[in-house]
Amino acid sequence: MTAPKRTSSTEELKAALLGHGLDLNGTIGSGLIWEPPVKIFHSSHVTDVEIGAYSYISPKAEIRHAVIGRYCSVGDNVNMRGSAHPREWLSSHPFPYSNIFTHSRTYRPPLTFEGYGKRTLIGHDVWIGSQAIILPGVRIGTGAIVGAGAVVAKDVPAYAVAVGNPARIVKYRFEQPLIDRLLQSEWWAYDLPKYLERQPGIPLDNPEGMLDFLARNGGTIDRISPRRKSYSRQQNSIVISNIPASGT
Image: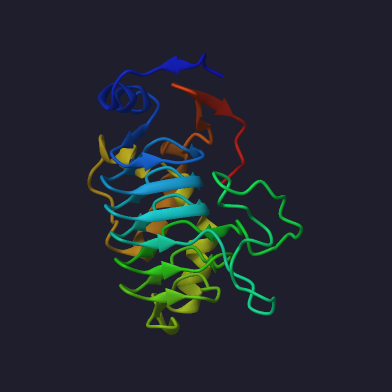
């Protein structure tokens, strides 16, 4: 763990994080874990989020209590909500399980609610279109696409395309044999942008050809390091820590 670093300006904070593989132009709430490199565009806010290498969050997104894989594209104004609300209790309001008015009320909430802070799980290579809303606890499989403006209340399988409100599956990106090959290959473990720096002529626009290429040449391509970093605040200081890898 690095020692706490006192920052006097936003630019100083951005420079410190950029040195650890996080290109931050938005804001962080209670904490963030990332696998370098990651980019968060302006006006986006993340809190209690884990995000994998080469994933990015577009402007004006609100992401809470989520785990996001590698090579994911999160569109602008996307909302991954942090909590559901009880529908069968006296009130759907959070006051029975969370005192959000601590400035004026000192009571201890008497209940717990399993939907509070429920984590949303996003696989690798997921594209979430602009203004989509992902409800708490939903799982979106690797390779899936969520259409712009969709409201996702149920799990989305790998490589499915989900659109609408409520979101429904309209098709799959590929036929099942190719989906199986893609999942088995775990191609997202490879550092392909780094490889492109010395070998740009690989068939990225041909999934089957690319899988064949990886089968022949995968040993010459660097793997993404599973090292992860975390960000937290201590008063006027930030703490950036190296934490154990969780795998791919």
